[in-house]
Image 1: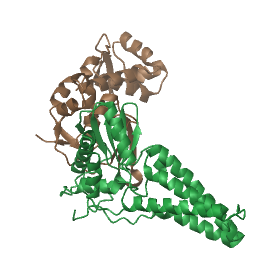
Image 2: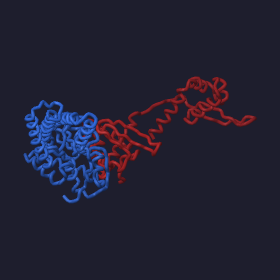
Image 3: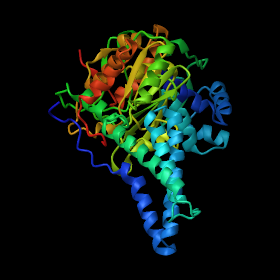
Image 4: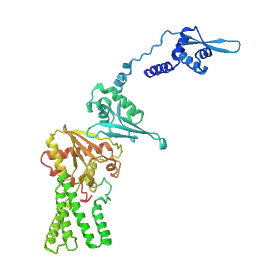
Length: 203
Length: 270
């Protein structure tokens, strides 16, 4: 859900960042309604560009589109229906607290035969980075993930592929990590589950 | 100890120094004459005695001191004997060096046969695997935290000294821990001679100053077992073995460590 909101906002920003955006919006504010060809001729741009801009604003709900029957063929006219474009992101909503609280009960361990390499930090007891290989043959790709110290300590205590699954909470306890680090732990755990390097036991 | 868990050891790295010396002797003798052949061997012996000195300084192991003298005396003997380049006509002094060389070589042979000059890596791996019946694999390159043992920094350093002296493990002292590298016979050269001053790709046990014991088994050592033994159990067993070693040392019964390792009945040269 949150990801969708960010996507919507980035879409709005994408169109607002166009060179012609301000002129286009001025036209929309000052005209009762306008067709794509009229806007294009007014702003001296390609009709396809004007059409795309208007369609985007329509999809995002800032503009209303109505079909008008001309003597030749039907076409669309666009009318601004909102006074403001507000871009607001609640950054705290991105925090993984809810998911983390549920996730801390996951029972996990390293997956058997996972195509992954853990590199231990020199002179210390934590994992410094993880290298994951995906794909096969020539399409094989390497992804290196540098870990934060809490993430590295967590993975240091991750049960081995043949050991019993343990809850994230109990692994964190072994790694002497407090709950403040749970969101970043969940982030790396979810990523490694996605890459099939960590195995999650179904409840 | 009946069923061997490790594959037979066909490694010939330990024979390389002798083989290289022999080849050098042959080549130089053919192209430059016997006198130069003997001289080259004398220099190689003296060079190896320097390596033994380095190994002694790094490990404090008695056998390297004996090897140092054996090689040095024999090298000097060859250099000043009748066939050597530094022959002065005196036959008594070369004889003295030969006698000293023989005495030290005999002593070194005794140390080798009695396993006092043996790196105990294979013994350790064999004993650690004895109780493990499952072969579920599960290898991972991650270290495995095993246990926490009560200790003081002094005890840990003393333990490191003891294991090093008796060739049980090669210790690296770090800022907050000691890492004990498990060394198999024939795999010790780069470590003890200081060619490679790290333990990457080797198996090790680390104990930090708070007593946290961690085990890391290298893929090479894991594949040296006949079966893909259940990895976490193997790591735990190895960790427990070292915990036991530490307690034996702490009680002043360090000899029990060597007794235990002798139970593996591995050849003195393996």
